[in-house]
Length: 218
Image (cartoon, rainbow, N blue to C red; front, side, top):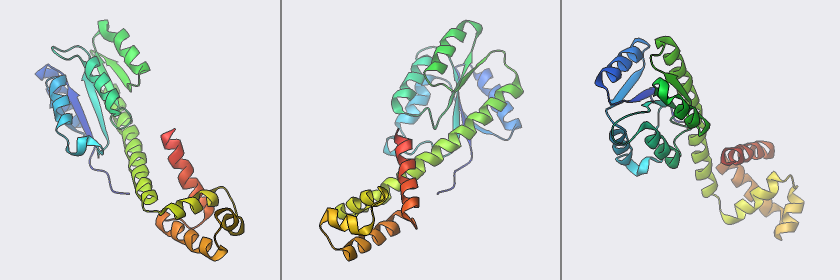
């Protein structure tokens, strides 16, 4: 598994003073941040990511997002992030005024990580940020592991995939040979190649690996 880069907190708020205060607060807890003055600016950054951002973010990340801004609202940007499938790797914490609490609660039901009402407790906010970053790190690790697994499966030949499916069903080599109308020796060769390409030592390990991938897709 490739090592993850330093965590990053993205700040989207139209008020310079708020972004500056948040950046200072995060620095005091040794957290990096990057500020955007509008939802449009943040989305433009996403649009310019290489490869349509398929492997972004590559570091534990979260987004502190103001609900009410001129132009595109925080909620509209959140809905774009939902469409992009980014909520697991980029948890969203809404920053809300009192009147926006019902909106923020509804967003949490849609998958936002949390909301924090202004004026907020500095320590409570950063604690939630750190928890969101930990969740992001887990999601990125799972996403990357799934990508590695997909690459390994793609390297298998059609016959190797057939043998693999029967191996994980628990069939012995003799029954696999009968079902595929090939020799037991041929099954043994394919089985060994499957184990090598999938980087496993046993049928149980192979089954657990594929079960984990199915859970990630579920």
